[in-house]
Image (cartoon, rainbow, N blue to C red; front, side, top):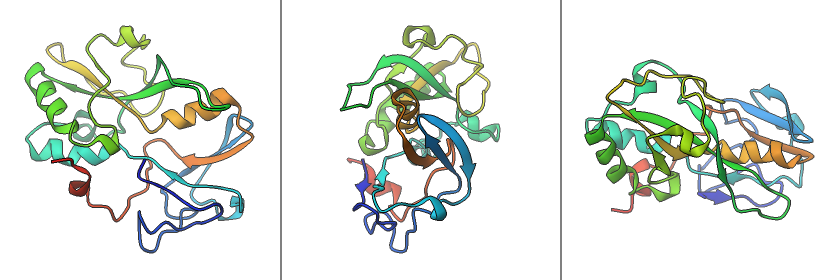
Length: 203
């Protein structure tokens, strides 16, 4: 969690000096009774005084560090959105919110997977270390080439799929929990903040 706003506030100084959360996300999804009804480019007309913004970290943040270390990011190389999958990993229920974890996936060779784990462990606020690597069936993913969100990417025979917790998880929880009204980013269309990625590293 990077920040939480005051009820009704469309600004948050912890994230950006001139933020308008109702206009500055590239694309939004609106949920009504657990159903994603619309994808729009701004939500100023939908904004309410009882809405609270929760800013969650995104694994895109640590990709810069991976690239700087010489690792290749497949979805970037192929000009695609990162593949994301629903899993069988249950979340800890909180009030009326229940559901399973959603993960993003990046394939690496064995040596590069080890290096990716070392690098991303330094970024716990933006999902940190992977939650699983190897056999996707062990976490309930039947078809690696058919992600639930994002785009499929090529996985070579010598590569290991590596899975990180994903910020789309709350969106799946909204669906599973049937929340009356909520607004999120559209998968792959995250808010870019004023927080330098290097400041989120532990060391």
